[in-house]
Image (cartoon, rainbow, N blue to C red; front, side):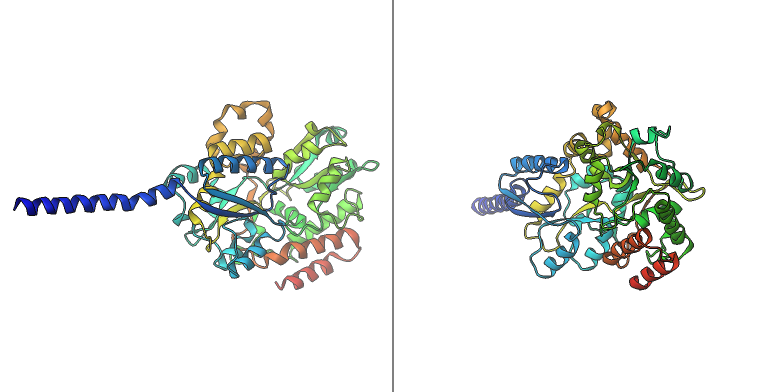
Length: 431
């Protein structure tokens, strides 16, 4: 009897020990990740822009914590990231981590190319980091309970950058915040070789025309379809704004093929007093300033129409997701989470001048210093009454921006009627 009891207890102990041993690899795997994580982003592995510098530091810290993981940055042209990713996913050659613009989220997730992050993110991240991110950005990434991505660098993506020294010539501290007052000021800022206003007219990742329309508020987008009325009264009023800016010399009919990079480089040389620019590049604009002092660079919301509040359009902005076909989802998830640590958020702010993703980081003493004044300007815009996002589902997203940019070029460079130009845009979109 004693022998049988001993044997049974021995078997139970051995079984328990076996279960414990069986659980060790899983626990060790969480801490001792290995393999390769391929990352598609528009940032270069060896680039020198502030955001690239921060990304390298994050990767360095991640590799120190996970020496068995090789993080490979495979930079892609930002205009092609999402479409290339969808194709790569269909061909089973997708990277593990993908950076996407929010306007492409619906297109990518409809193709089944993204993993559900709620199945991958750690319990600690869900409990501490996720609630610490800006809700307006986080909620947009959830489609029918599926969390497709995490928003990076919360900001009013396409804002107006302006030179305080140029505005001071007219006795102004900042651009007027209604189009009725903005238009004549922009015209007066044209002086010698300097133009009052610069817009990217050939950058298919943005549309200055839609930014102008945002001065009417979120009602410009149909709640059910995500479309806007291309030939409606709001679009016609936006078109008339463009024509008035051309007529008073604020916009040049010769600048019809300007990309965002073209605007940035020319603004640095003193070519413009105000421009439409990508908010996360604010520090880069400051650093390359040559035709003016970088200390004079400031940011503004977009002017409004009538009694509407100044417009702050949150998008296109960047988000980060994981491929549904990732070969290494555990390591990929750990890397994505490393982009959103408090330490990373503070680095994005200090080095790149970006609003930190983690709101709690704003309590850091750094944000009470003069060096953080620009970040406070952006956080103020994020809480402004005119803040809005693109609809979660936007149809024809690969066509909308190029079609509306063509219309913008025609409005600036031709005398064709507004009705004809907008009618052609609507027909091209098939709306």
